[in-house]
Amino acid sequence: MKHDGKQRLNLTVMALVSVYLILPLMLTFLYSLFQEWTSILPTGLTLRYYADLFADPGFYMPIVRTMIISTVPVLLCSLITLLAMYVVVVHHPRWQKIMQILCTVPYSLQGVILAISVLALYSGLPLPFSDRIAMLVCTYCVLILPYTYRGIQNSLNAINARQMIEAAQLLGCHPLAAYLRVVVPNLVSGITVSAMLSVSLLFGDFVVVNIIGGSYYSTAQMYLYKMMFRSGQQTSAMIVILFMLTLLISASVLLLQQQRQRNAQVKQEEADGIHTV
Image (spheres, helix red, strand yellow):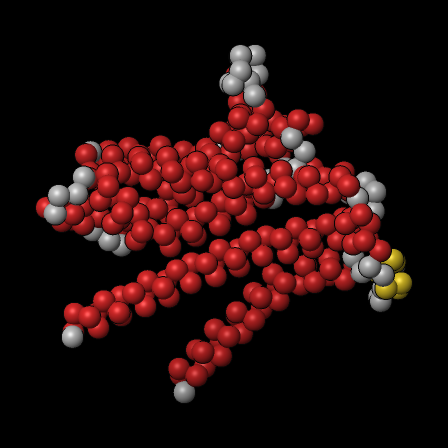
């Protein structure tokens, strides 16, 4: 009886949280489908605002730029963090605390302060240091570093990476090769979660890209900001499209990860069957 009451309470809390999160998006979607909403019920059902967006030639390039600038820093930061963790795990375990402190420093950095500081420091230098896109990529790498590090570190804590590398070395494998072939595949789940979180964070950024990129690199958020001065319904339609695009990217990554896990499980079952025979 007590268990049923606790389960009902959990379901109620989850339902309330779900409504709280989904309701603003649903209202935004409804607002984008009607011409006017000046009373309790909206009037003038139409898809014109979506059609106008897809017919605008300047709509597609900001989306492509946003996807590129949201993906490249994540890949670069993940690669650098993995290599740094290799040095810490294999050669210098005592550096773990120092690396943890360095990787959590960006938590205290505000986007405006970081962007203005980077722009003031590097704008007068020769290329490639003064290149706006290079500055933007490096700034994003700093911003997402805590999330990337935490995802990889949590996955490393779940396995004995040092012991796995030592076992591979006994079989004649180089430590770096053992780290890349044995340890990193066991970190895929943590890397995927941190990468999705980082991509979502960068996908919705406006402050940093507006200060550093400006007119050099117009993204979807800057396009959305300009849209706010034209039409509220068109702005709502743009928000819905960006949300659906982010949802599709996240769902695709999760499906690929699940497919990879199923394939690995099938191979493991086949190997177990061969050993049994």
